[in-house]
Amino acid sequence: MAVISRGFSGRRGLADAKLPPGQYLTTDFPVLSAGPTPHISLDRWEFTINDGSNPLKRWDWKAFRELPAETITVDLHCVTRWSKLGTSWEGVSFDVLLADVRTDLPYAMFRSYGDYTTNLPLKDILNHQAWLVFKYDGADLAPEHGGPLRLLVPHLYLWKSAKWVKELSLMPHDKPGFWESLGYHIYGDPWREQRYSDE
Ligand SMILES: Nc1nc2c(c(=O)[nH]1)N[C@H]1C(S)=C(S)[C@@H](COP(=O)(O)O)O[C@H]1N2
Ligand SMILES: [Mo]
Image (cartoon, rainbow, N blue to C red; front, side):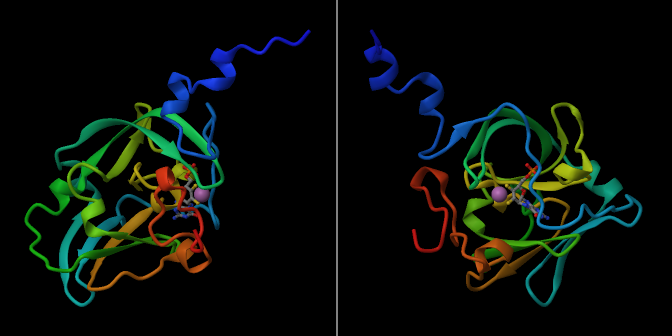
C-alpha cells in the first residue's frame, strides 16, 4: 500500500519557499559559459564606468581592492532551472561604486573581457542589490566562475551576473545584451519566471 503523507505532497516546505517556480535545488556549482574562460592578468585589469561617450570612473586592481568590501550571502537562480541557496561572496556594492556618479541615464549595459554583455535597469543595481565580487566561499573567485571579478545580481536570473566584467555603460534606453538578443527575457525576474522574451 502506498502511503503518501499530506505533509510532503500538499505543503510547500521551508526550502521550497526560497525556490522560484520551475527551479530545483543543487548543492554543486555548475559552470555555464558561452565561450572560453578569458585569462586576465591583474596588472592589466581595469573596471570602468562610462556614459556612452565619456569615461566617468576607472579602477585598476589595486585601487579596486582598496574600496570598502562586504560579505554577502545570497541565493542563485539559473534560467536552466538550478538554484543554489546560501552562497557566500565578498565584493563591493554599486552603492559604493556609483556614490559620486551623478547621472540621469536609467539603464546599464555590462561588458566583460571576452565580450559578453548583459543589460539591467540602473535601479536594479542600487540599494544593495548588486555587487562586483572577487571572493566566493572565502577564496579568490575561480576563473571559470568569473575570476578575478564578476557581477552578482542575485534577484535576477544568473545570466545577468556577468563573469569577468570590465565595463559599465550607462544608457538612456534599455538595450538587449548577449542572451537577451538571443531570446532570453529583457529583465529576467525568477519569481515571475521571466525566462524568455515571450513570457
Ligand atoms: N562573461 C560571461 N558571463 C556570464 C556567462 C558567460 O557566458 N560569459 N554566462 C552567464 C550564465 S548563462 C550563467 S547561468 C552564469 C553562470 O555562472 P557560473 O558559471 O559561475 O555558474 O554566468 C553568467 N555570466
Ligand atoms: Mo544561465
